[in-house]
Every structure is written in structure tokens, then in C-alpha cells.
Image 1 (cartoon, rainbow over the protein chains, first blue to last red):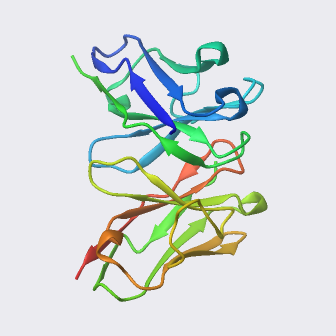
Image 2 (spheres, rainbow over the protein chains, first blue to last red; image 1 turned 90 degrees about the horizontal axis):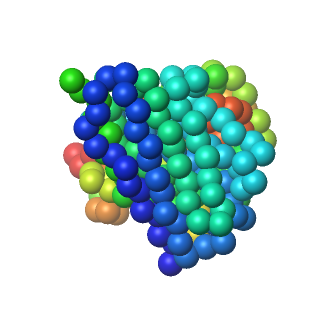
Length: 120
Length: 108
């Protein structure tokens, strides 16, 4: 059974940093691309970032480019999102999602999310 | 980036009726890399359709997707009680990936 468990969310002040983690199990992690998708309270979905199986292809939403960094450790079956210079508009539930295949693929499994609140 | 516009914003229908949801892209979606997701309150999204028209594993055949280029449609042939939810389209052929704003299908 595929499981994706996010952690690392919490309350953080504007301008500070936070690192999200996603522990994956139930599939061959290094065969698939992975993504971060967020959802602000009461709002729609926003793709944040994606990474190919070997980290050779990486992409970011314009809203986070230059502030967020995605990475993965295939030996640890883990995905990360380093978030710097956080803003109030980054407040959201952050989902970790497994790609259906290579980098250009939708997300077929999702975690339950970790909540990030940016507020002073 | 490719902007996806979903319409209508809300669709009020009764169980058993047919639902037709639209997703229009600001530019052509390469290789029909268009997906549809369903999201219920308090739950993560669920992949329904990928490649514009292929059903994901375990998705009932009352869900179908069609379209190409800039115009895509999700059709639910006969609404079941569990189908009332919010539906999102996503293009994943051009970086950055983008989602539409969603269509809520509510009980009339």
C-alpha cells in the first residue's frame, strides 16, 4: 500500500524558514517523480514544485521560485521542501504527491498534508 | 505559464443526472497532458483522468474525459451521491504545472 506521510509544518513568522519532509513507502521510490502541491484555507490547489526520479528535472511555481528548494533522498525514500523567506500567502496545507510516472505526469497518490501557517 | 479556466464555478444537479465540466487552457496543452481530480471536504485529491481521456486505476466508467488543444471536458454520466465534490483540472505538460480553479458539483 502506497503511503506518503508529510511532516515539518507549523507556525512560523514571516521571513523565517521551514523544511517539510515526506516519508514514502509501499512503492519503489526512485522509479517515480514526486511533487509538492499546496492548498490555502478554503481555496483551490496550487502546484508548488516537482522533481524527477533522479533529480535531473526540477520545476517550481513562479510564486515560490528562488525561495523554495525541492530535493529527494532515494536512499531514505524521502522528499523534502526547504522553504525560505516565508510570506503570509504561503500559508496552506502542503501535500506530498507521487507522480504517475516520469516527470511529466499527474499525481496518483497523495499524503494527508502538513499545515504551514505564516504569521507574526 | 498556462492558465486553466474551469466552468461553471458551481454545478447544481440531482443524483442520476449528467454532469459536464469544462476546462479551457490559455494555450495548447502539449500531448494532451491534462488530468482531472476529485476532492471531497477534508480529503486529499484523487486522480480520476490523465492524458485527457484515460481513467486512473479503480475509477468507475461513469467518469470520462475528452478534448485536446485548449478545450477539455470531464463528464459524469449519471451522478451518484458520492460524486458531489470539487473537481480540478491540471496540465502537466508544460512547466510550471498548473491547476484550474475548480468546479463544485453540489446537490440540487
